Picture 1 (cartoon, rainbow, N blue to C red):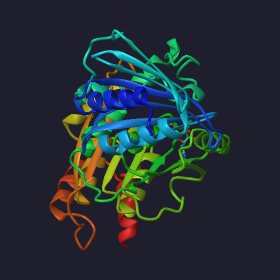
Picture 2: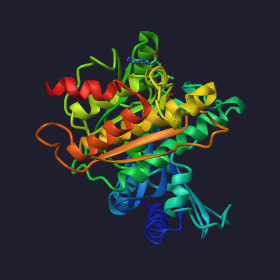
Picture 3: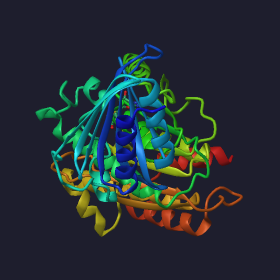
Length: 396
Ligand SMILES: C[S@@+](CC[C@H](N)C(=O)[O-])C[C@H]1O[C@@H](n2cnc3c(N)ncnc32)[C@H](O)[C@@H]1O
């Protein structure tokens, strides 16, 4: 029989979770050493599927997050308190309660005024703001973004903002996309240290409630080893890094391809690999545009632009990315190009997003769109765009 004080605590938890006044709940002080979980930290979250309870299973060296419906969550909490944990504290707008289970017959219940009477922040915007929270995300600390206490380091404010902005954009993109399965296969080309790779994995598993299979492709083996070690430490089982070149890494079917700040034609290689692997979503933030810059040579009034280095550079950037966008459109993607983050944070701020909307034409590219592409090439005296070359080669 459940002790009446424990029953009272569980009833209060149930009513707070059901009427959405629960702010947080933590279970701690294990009675058995039956597994490696030290604490359970529970918060309400609003997911695509509605109001849920998000559980962080805190282990000695990693956190694992799982989302449950309210019913599933409450049932889990009841069993965990009856069998496993000796203490629990709930914070809710009606009051903060603390239960201490000393034995089956000895249970203490303490009730306090609420520390905060604020309603739990459950609006979607609120959740978006803390999609990648600084506190509690151990990978951010391991990557040097946050301090041990979970505060963003002074010199990493821009990186942290960039990570969140990027996840916000992905969240917006995925509102228009249905993968119709939980296992979402993602490749992050030129993953570097993996800031965004980790954040994306975290977001897909926690907010989208998916079972992501994310691979970070990176040339530098030392970064790959560090990324794999950290993925293991944080319990991100579906995240791995491979030391390989974007252009020849083995890829099977993909749902999403990301390439952030892959230099010059590495962005073209990445986009090409995404198209080849049938990715539904392509996201690229290009960086340096040397291949087109070397060719820009209009034999018309536009030649004035090429008289000034900075203008030529900007023109080459615009041209390279506009042509990439046209090529994605020709391959059946609905394409958007927009500013990723304000220029004071990073000069590499353009994002090209493609969402697959149609099966490619039999000959690979839409003819009318390619006529626009050719007209642009002619106007600027461009002989070759690297992404076009890759696409045409594949067609042969
Ligand atoms: C500027 S960093 C960007 C890292 C990360 N995507 C970000 O935005 O934080 C580009 C990374 O791409 C890697 N890289 C460049 N060319 C590559 C290629 N062909 N194949 C694999 N990785 C490449 C580099 O080693 C570098 O770590």
